[in-house]
Length: 353
Image (cartoon, rainbow, N blue to C red; front, top):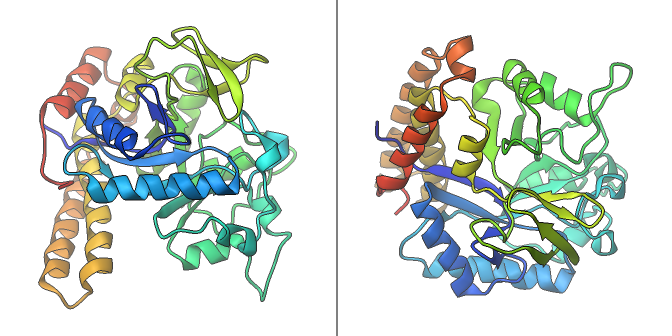
């Protein structure tokens, strides 16, 4: 079976490259290598850092996107850091945390930031002219995800970052981030299905609770992915890699050591092959449509063609959703998963050109 390539919207690096330290050639190298590993579109993700370095690295990634001629398409930056809750800091260095205000965001603002992870409960404390950081970002066309947070009010958010990790968990007496994400069908939920970040029962709960098209598989991979590194510095902290898990000296998971396709195989993530093909086609069509609309406007022939492509993708996806049964949504064997991912790797498509 031939499918489109995967889209990775949350990863901090791979092949020894850390996006918080990378130069333009490093970013291009990752984009070229990861396409051979089955990923066709990427959102390089920045961990919490100083204002100066965050500004610098956004510009580096943006410049790489302009220079690339091949490899996984660089769609934009995912800014995971800076506006997080210290109570759920994970591996992030709280020294660099800023109050989630519009003024503070403007210190690092760039039109290449496409996704921002933040703590919504902190944003609601800071209002200016009836607007907080969440509404400001939404008005700018930036996707907002709740992550490294404890609040249960996710109003205004598009989704949540690495479901179950670095968020308040399920509690039958109070609202929580995880509970709100599970019961709200309009929210997307990232999940790291590498076998370490989320156990099997939690994955089953996620797939039973959320519509399948609202679950976003991510790797959250670190620079150690696809390397023999035994230790490295990430987010100002030394991280130890034993070949499977990457943790701080205190045992905090720093992220994943697997790329997206590898993580799926590792945990036998089970997705109907017909569905995953059309799901990725639709995601690609939407990205392409938005880019064409912004560049050429709604009265152009390019817009009309991109709109038709999206309509076709939506129709095929809707039909594929009808093929998903409770069993096929959650299960097919590891050999099938490997076969699909081999198709991702071996078939190069012009969709992202």
